[in-house]
Length: 212
Image (cartoon, rainbow, N blue to C red):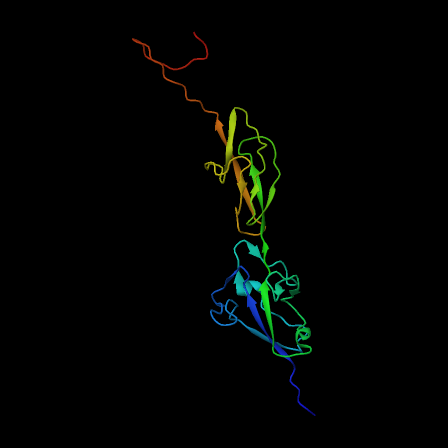
């Protein structure tokens, strides 16, 4: 009987806004310039093929691959047809032809993080606010109170200087997915510096709460 060779194809992986890891550099010239040099081949017989993991080939600050099932866009950077990186049936791509070239583009999802508000001596409560990497969003308006003090803004440490004004628009306070960033209320007031008066022929001894 005839010895039949199964149809086959080639896979090129593209970073789609990410950067190549040093051990998987990009192709720099030719038809597939910009794709990873880690090229895969497959055949019709591979019905549960493990593909390259997005994070093994590429990295992107502030972003992550959302799931195995939606790891790769098929043949377009914005395609809504996805290829599963953990186990994908490759047979359909070469069912009626061979020499097929697939271009897979990394699917990235922006990281999310929380901002926690610390009254830093003030009274009251404020809920955390949620933020998305690369998207500007206003901080929650201050709700803390402190008798005898004025609110100046938010610091990144309990003793730090003001970094963000009240309700300031912020972006990318952290690149870590699921992280919590704490901001501390900064207050003025409390201590008051009084002037030093002068009177000819007298020595100033200090301030009293009554005239005598």
